Image 1: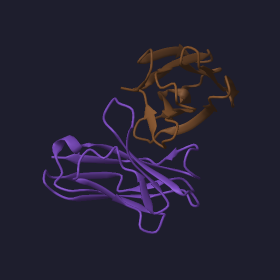
Image 2: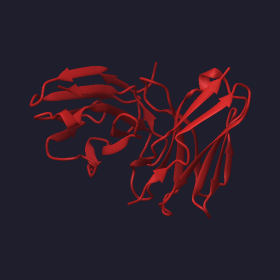
Image 3: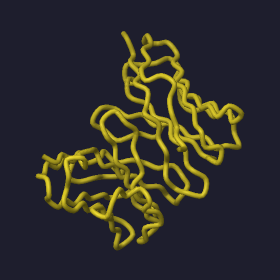
Image 4: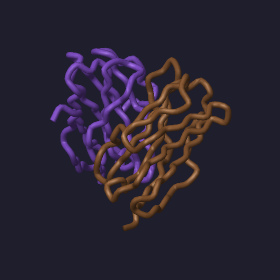
Length: 113
Length: 112
């Protein structure tokens, strides 16, 4: 299909480890978003890319979280020194341009032991 | 702070009946709203959207109503089917920003 894809689908790591989560947006979509969803809650915004640049990173909880999108397509969310509280589903979405409908991927379930 | 919330956390309806899911929002500057459906283990699936210059929009078996006076949004699903069972979220796009603000969701259960 031509939807947003995310890898891995599940990631289990130990406290203190580094993880990378990958997102492949819909082809041609210039805007890319990362959200985090805790159990029983709605997704919460983390960061928004327009092209290669992070246009809004106000949702990143602290400096352990970082995201890149070097070529304006694939994005990687990086979490350093993971903590148990980082356990959640990390969702990626894309839209044709900023301000339009956002289409979500299946998410990566991160579990920090 | 600004938030989007839902009146009911759970809703059960009989198969074939119509269902209405409600949502209240608090940011009067929001100008775009989306309803998403989320099934267990999957990402949110776009259902229908509406801009603030409209008060009603219809899709296939779904209708979204927007009442800006009372900051209320609703999703109507006609002739519900077992496949409609899911958690439904409303989300608003903050004007001038690109981030969606989601509510906690309503779990819709379709009874046979």
